[in-house]
Image (cartoon, rainbow, N blue to C red):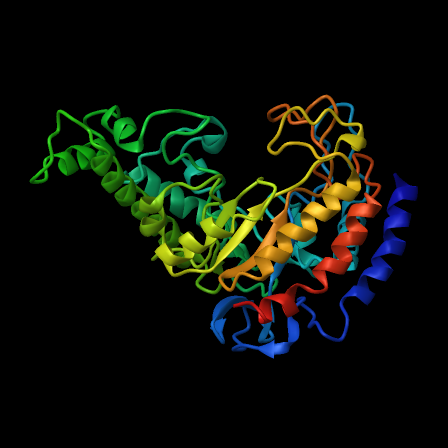
Length: 404
């Protein structure tokens, strides 16, 4: 591991070269300027949405998720003995490949290495552990949720409130908003099954008592109307809690696992600064992102996407997306995907999932065993992929500036 860390250190020296004259210290593009506020913010310039760095230069968030050293199975290589050195060299790698953001799930050691970072506050998860993994439904109207939101924001946001390197916060990860792989019930049906004394149950009953509704028959209109109320309450309480403890940074949304519906978008739109969305489709979800922007008026980011290849030797049997044949196919998939995003005026970034391959026997969390990494399980880079990423990432700002 020491030899590997030394090799990474050499790569980190090369990383500085990737931050060329066209980029500021944060990775912002110096050919186009926004307001200089001292923190990252969003801004619409000449009809295109951008993030803007603390120095006032436009910024597309080109990120990698789960930049981490922790082993995900008992047989995976263990963590390096010097995690601070690992963090410095991993940041150097990302810079060398043209990335400027450590995405969700990244190690805290990266926060002081000179790369923008994006913590998850885990607001709903402060009420119910593994809420996203199990698809649990939280009563967002309850005092318990408001207290949990404030507690989570105090813990995660207050310590970083003055850090210019913090890009923004995700409120939660992949919450369930209705019928998906974790459950079939609508949120209206779920809330009606809550204890009759709960605020959420009372709110659902009140909706069904409105003129023109028949409480004995739940219609799609009823479900949609309640879903919008729930989404708005979740987003409002979460955002208010974050801003009580940190009024300087962006709220990047709750990392939608898939399209949650028009009602949810209308509900969260007034409260989030960016709408973050996941899509493992082979093509960038342009139509969906355009709809999200139309409904919310906010810029969008794809905060999980990836391609995995058969020639990696990994099983690739668990985890999103169908495998492609080769590493060259992965590289081509990345290039076509992000170039399409850059041509979308409302899109301000993309985060590849993930930094390191998953173990062949499956990660402890859920058994995923796929070739998602930019590096192998032993931290060796996938050079065909990262080489293509380097060239493509260097063109992103120019493509976005020319988008229509």
